Length: 191
Image (cartoon, rainbow, N blue to C red; front, side):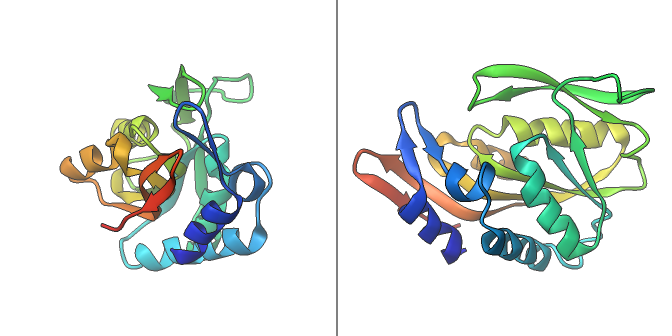
């Protein structure tokens, strides 16, 4: 998605530790035109795949998943990083490691919102090691749901998560695919 690449080059910031800061347009302050385009592109990529729900993890993936859910006219379910008092009853649960925060989260989804009748599309902002998507796949499996695939805004291919997930048979569509990023800049690739 050329628009995503252009915004990364124009407004993204490289931080120490392999972090790409896109908070000015993607996951803290959100550009509404980009968000709309993301939703439409995800809907186009996964049209006809039988998706019944969109599944993401709080919090940065929620806006993107909402755009996809709106474009596809499907409900959005998000896994909470902590079981709170407003999550009652039975839940599906798995552990997910956050590259950005350097910690593990026990993510949960109420069994009321994810069932064996569902075919879910996973949506997230970044794909690095793949831990978040692995966790979402696990939640879907626990529910007996099918997984249509995964859509991510930005994949850091050099961290290997996307390739590992594809090797396991998961369809992964990345709107911007970064081959390399370092002090010399960002190099995009294609599948």
